[in-house]
Image 1 (cartoon, helix red, strand yellow):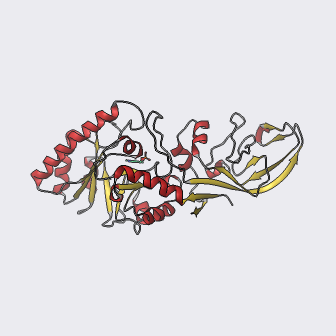
Image 2 (image 1 turned 120 degrees about the vertical axis):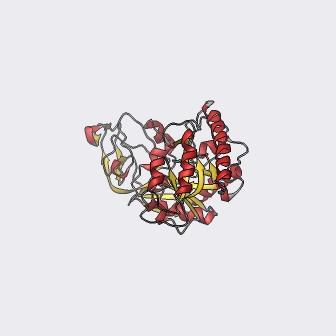
Image 3 (image 1 turned 180 degrees about the vertical axis):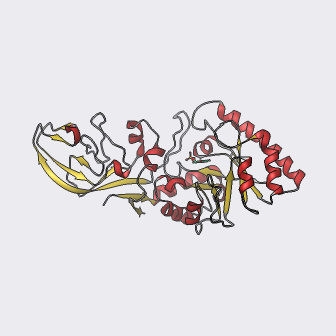
Length: 341
Ligand SMILES: *Cc1c(COP(=O)(O)O)cnc(C)c1O
C-alpha cells in the first residue's frame, strides 16, 4: 500500500529553527489546517505536542475538536458555526456580521485588514467591532492580520507591518477605554517570521516552515529547513519491455532499449499530480516515472518492492508550476501515515 513517511527528526529540526526566531515555545502556533498540509492532522498534532508546542491553528471546529487533547490554545480560522465549543477554542472573525452570530463568552480573535484586502475587518470599523464584542459579552482574546507579500522582496511587507503597528496602538487605546484586557497580537506566518529579526509579537502562525519549506525569495537568508514528508509507492507488478514498446496512456513513453519496468500504487487519484511525457521526473533514487501517471498507478524503470516517489516537494512544485504547499496538501488524506524516528 502507498504510504507517507513522516520524519520526526526533520520536524523537530524545523521546529528548533522556528524556536530560534520566536525564542519561546509559547510563541509558536503550529498551523495544522487542511490535514496539516497533507501530513496528517493527528500525527503532526501528536508530534508537535511531544516537542512542547501548546498552540495550534486550524480551519474548522471539526479539526479543532479532533486535536483538542493535544493543545491548550486553538485558533479556528474559518468557521463560526460552533457546533462544539471548548475553552481552548478561539474563533477568528472577519466581519461585523459574524460577531452578531456568536454565542456569549466565545473567545474571539479579530482579523484586521492591514492591506491585503482579502479577509479581515476594515481598520475604520475596528472600534465598532471591539465595542460589539464587549456589548455581546464575547471575549476579545486576539487581534491579527496576514501579509500579502511576506515571501517577496517588496516594500509592501514593511508598509503592512507599520499599518499593523499603528492598528495595535489604536486597539490598545480602545481596550483601555473599555477596561478590558489586551488581546494577543499576531501577524507572522512562516516567511514573515524568518524575515523579522527581533520577533516581539505574542505568537507566530507557522505552517509551511514546520513541514520543511519556505517559498521566500532566495535573496533572504533562508534557514536550512528539512522536508518532513516522503511519499512511497508499493509495487503492483513488474514486466519486461522491448526497445520501441510504449508505456501507458497515449503510449507516452517509448523504450529506448529492452528494459524492466514496474507499476506502483500511486496515481493522481491519490493527489499525486499527473505527470506526462512533457515532464521528466526522477525519483530520489534516480528512477524515472515513465510517460503519463494514471489515476491509481504509475510506471517506473525499476523493480524495487517499495519506492520513494518524492521526499522533497520542490522539484514537483517546479514541474507543475505551483508551490510546495499545493503538492503536499493535495495528497489524499486516506494515505496511510507512518512516523519514522
Ligand atoms: C495558512 C495560514 C498561515 C500559515 O502560513 P504559512 O505560510 O504556511 O506559514 C498563517 N496565517 C493564516 C491566516 C493562514 O491562513
